[in-house]
Amino acid sequence: MTNRTGLAGVLAAGLVLAGCATPADGPDRAVLAGAPSGDSDEAQIDPGPSGQATPVGGRPWDAGATEACAAELADGFTQVAQTTDPSGVTTFWTRGRRAWVVCDVAAGLEGAPVLIRSTPAARRGFGARTLALRTAPVAGGDERPDAVRLVAGGLLPWRVDELTYLFPDGVEQPARFVASDEDPDQVWWVVAHTPTAGGLADPATDPADLEPVTISIVGAAAEAFRLPWEDLQRSE
Image (spheres, rainbow, N blue to C red):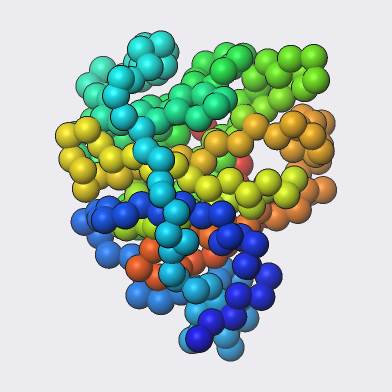
């Protein structure tokens, strides 16, 4: 049914969010961004999920991360979810029906937390803008004094079972999913990666010298994006 050539490795370590739904419906067929037009009628990825369990955030929340993020946000934002990984804590905030912020606090962060804000594009689905990464310098210790933490995330526009980034350093990082405290149908995602070697760990690396990032998204259908590194950098 599908052609998995070149993408099997991208989907091998995905996560599953069982029974999760958001109000919008996803794409009705699989697509591969940048694929030749002649191939557009055939899915390039098998949309079946991997069947692995999905770790999600929950209480108790990290009070330090909550405080650090609240100090960076305008009045009126309410924290609705939080999730952790070995290198940091990600919190999710809403104001009203449309405004939201993903706030990431890395261990050893040198400076303010990373903020990813909602945009009109985020409500329309996935693309270079909504999948873009923020970069934050962190104190990496003697072995990686110039370490950086790469973060992408947001509110899912529709149900997603797996969302995976394959970075230029060969690391495949699956997203973590977490439902809002007040609305289980409001589900968030975050991908965080702290490279320890190679071009991604060196701030002096020319982005043009890095391999593209491959991002696979599997839900009711499947999408794949292969995007140049410079196209995935958030400026705010």
